[in-house]
Length: 88
Image 1 (cartoon, rainbow, N blue to C red):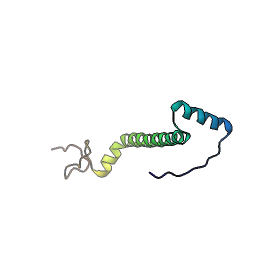
Image 2: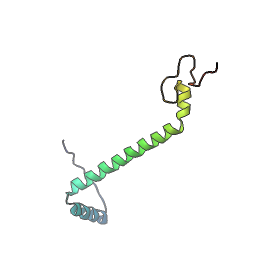
Image 3: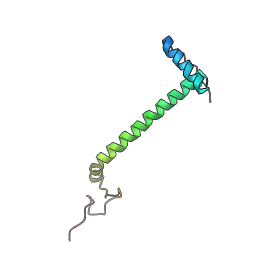
Image 4: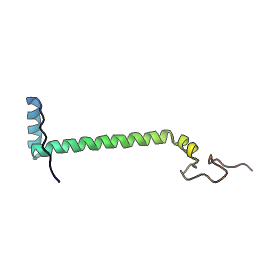
């Protein structure tokens, strides 16, 4: 994969901390920063998935009623758009 050069400015204490952490991990500064960014991006993605899942659980009944789905998420039988048991 092609690499892009980035130039960043940080205070000396941050730069020193980054150097020490990279050294402790046995990786280059480039690799250390790349790993930090990838980890951060993964956490953001995971947070989004968890929030979306919570939202869907919270509004599951509303979606089922709106789109005529039964409790399993399958289309409700014809003539019974609410997915409710019929009375006969």
